[in-house]
Amino acid sequence: GDDAFANNKDGRKIYVPDNSVGNSSTDGTYKHNWSAYESDIEALPKTASGNCGENGNDCTYTLYENGLLVISGTGAMANYGGDNQPWKDYRSNIKSVVIVNGVTTIGDAAFMACSNLATVTFDGNSQPVIFNQYAFCGCGFTSVTIPSNVTSIGDFTFSGCPNLTEVNIGKGVTSIEHHAFNSCPKLTTITVDTKNTKYDSRDNCNAIIETTSNTLVLGCKDTFIPNTATSI
Image (cartoon, rainbow, N blue to C red; front, side, top):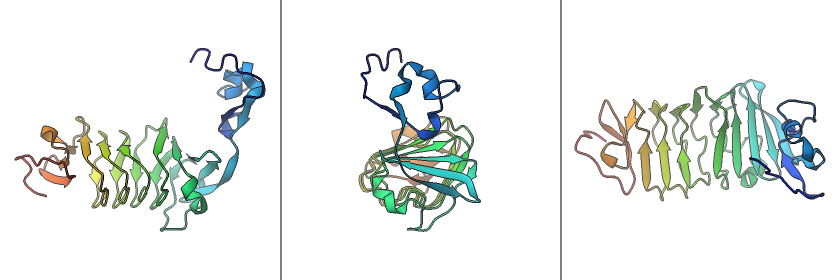
């Protein structure tokens, strides 16, 4: 916003992702847009970086010292087991993840056991995205809002998230696999976007119901089962 860094004193650094530093003559970079503070802008210190794509370097990752993990590239991330992610040694350090536009699939167990991971942001991502099985299993979320461009939530995707209290399903989700939110003991609030044509949370039931079959897909301890739900 206006005057966001007004009166910034010498020695007070502004840290931004390293691929956004550029120089004062390059459009789209922080140094160009905030040229008055060019001497104060530095890249965030990196902890680790490398490839994480299904086909190698089609997707890459950068982990910064402040706990930000950025996934960028095109296509699908690689699938992992329980303990072979390239950032596995830093999982407890990861606090936030940014998925850059172009990434289409979050791989199996990609962020499994990132116990301090609290937020995932899709940066300008408007194309369909799939969450594979166990992708966010055991993470530290307190609430999850599935963006409108996410179409599928795999088996056990958010299972074992001990602090998760709220789930909001976006309008684009057309598939929720078994046990997607299994073993989330604090889950008390569940809603579905009213524009979703596959699922609903009719009558403020605090659950996910498959609209055409009237099947209750996900409930919690505060769920009210409406009379129109015919199977579980």
